[in-house]
Image (cartoon, rainbow, N blue to C red; front, top):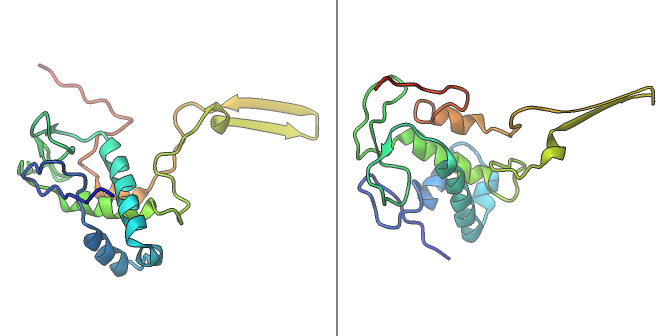
Length: 169
């Protein structure tokens, strides 16, 4: 199985995580995530990689330092939630904590699916009243489980899916 290679802000070659297994272990212990503590090392590593797949799928503000870096961070032109420009070689603690949460949420024992596969039937709603009235409709937009702890940790770093930023050039 692939080793966990942690990005530390120096554009580490072949980096595949912002967190270590031992870092998630400590976090899980602090917040009483018993499922993580009980998991095998192999399951922990697989869950960390699944969590990273989710984290890396998000649309982050700023730009990658280099075109060929392995992960989304480190980034240039990134401001924190208080509008302070962040150092370009900085991996925010919120990103690391979000990675911990994503790894724990990716355990096979959890009910959370950070990246669910859905089809049109998942968005269909049907109302049937005693055989008299039947209505069906499809909801607009994507319905997706959200882990608010992850999005709270990443507040200020990710682009909103509802707001389009326009700049004059």
